[in-house]
Length: 246
Image: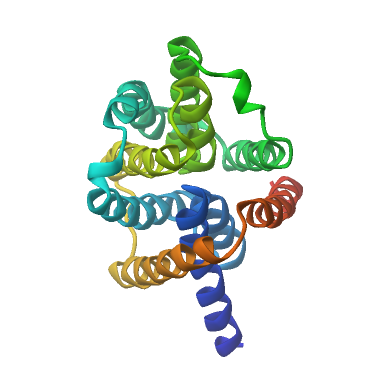
C-alpha cells in the first residue's frame, strides 16, 4: 500500500508540474483535490501547500523568462488580482464552509474545461478591453484566495483576448501572475496561523519542479490541440469528482 501511494504521489505531483509548463496553469486544479481527497490534508493546509509549491516554481520560471514577459499586462492584471487574493484569503476563506469552497472549486474546474473544449474566437478580439480585463482580474483574485487556485489556464486566454497579448507571451504572463497571486494569498493564510510540514513542502516542491521540466519537453514534442483536449477531459473528471464529494 505504501509503495502504491508513493507511486501515486509521484505521478500526480509530476502531472501538476507538467500542466504548469504546458498550459501556464492548472496545477492547483490537480493538486488540491489530491491533497484533500486522497492524501487526507485539511483544506487550508492543502491550499497553503499549493500556494507555496506552485508559487515558488512559477516564480523561478518567471525570473528565468523575465525578459520575454509582457510586464505591462502582468502588472495591470495584478494591480487588481493581488490585493483581492490577499483579502479573499484572510477574510473570505475563514468564514466560508469547506463544502462551499470545494463546490466553487469544482465549478471553476468545469468552467476551465469548457473554455478548453470550446475556445473563444480570438480573432474577434484585436483591441485592449480594460473593463473586461479588470473584471477577470477581480474574479481570479477572489478564487485564488478562497481555494488556492491561481487560475493560470484562465489568465492566459484572458490576456490574449482582452489585452491583445500574443498567446505565447500570455502563457508566460499567466505564470508570472500566478506567482504574484500566490504570494498575495499566502500572506492571508500564514497570517491566520495555517502551517504545513517542511518535509511535505520540500517533497511536493521537488516533484512539481521535475514535472515542469518534463512538461517543457512534452510541449515541444506534442501538438497543442491534442494536449488541450486530453487535459480538458481530465479537468472534467476532476470537476465532477469534486462536486460529487463536496
